[in-house]
Image (cartoon, rainbow, N blue to C red):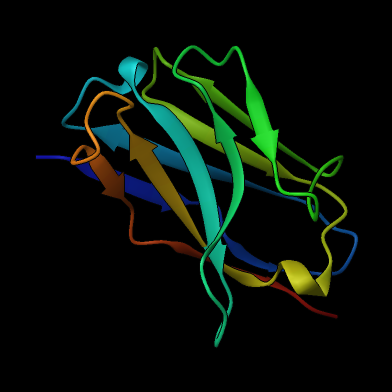
Amino acid sequence: QVQLVESGGGLVQPGGSLRLSCAASGFTFSMYAMSWYRQAPGKERELVASITNTGGSTNYADSVKGRFTISRDNGKNTVYLQMLSLKPEDTAVYYCNAQAHWDSVRNYWGQGTQVTVSS
């Protein structure tokens, strides 16, 4: 059974840091690109960061570039999002996503973890 389980969210003050984790199981993790998305109340879900299956290439939304870092450990079937210099506008539910490039049906989502940036 495919599972993506996010963790590491919480309440943090502006300027603070959080590290999100997404533990994957039930599929061949090392063959999938991984991404982090986020969704704030009343807003559309947006792509935050993505990483290729080997970790050789990454991409970031302009709003987080220079502050967030996506990484993966294929030995642990885990993808991470290190978030620095957090801003109130980063407040959202953050979701982990897995995508097989050869099959659009192979697209999986976690249930999300809440990140709240507030003083």
